[in-house]
Image 1 (cartoon, rainbow, N blue to C red):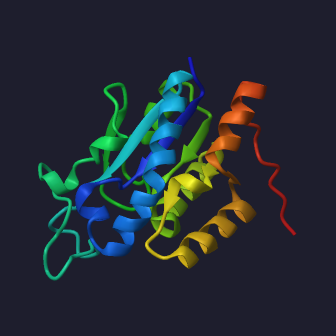
Image 2 (cartoon, helix red, strand yellow):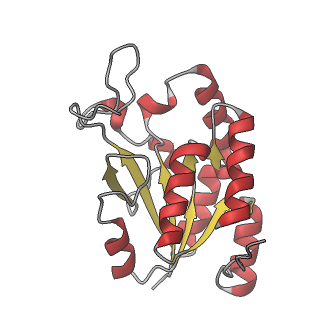
Length: 194
């Protein structure tokens, strides 16, 4: 059984369609991102899609001109079809981190997962907080830099620098596949503090 899982964040119609910058960033990433997911699945690894579902009573939930996006049961909350495969797991979350008040950790532990590849949108929010929460729980973390997106390139760059300096191995998806094929696993980052 695979000890590796890809976690995607917020690849949902209404979140991506929020503004032209997000649409463009996701469109640019989609070809290699979906190819990467296919390669991961072909090698027998797990794919979890973390689906943000806003609670109407949450005062911190972002609203678009007064409209609460990604409510349960709406098309806007659905994972974009290009990223989905029948064997994937879709898991609801109510906050930025996929671990916050969800059973993600328990599900990953039940599968024997010790390494997570964190992907999706936005790098500086959901990817970063999910990675930090994974680190706090002892996971080996990799972030494929070409499978994370932000509306602004500077936000993505800043988040990747933070992730690489703190808790994750940051590389591109081709290197992830190359290391997996060569070593059969993804080595843990040697965390050093200055």
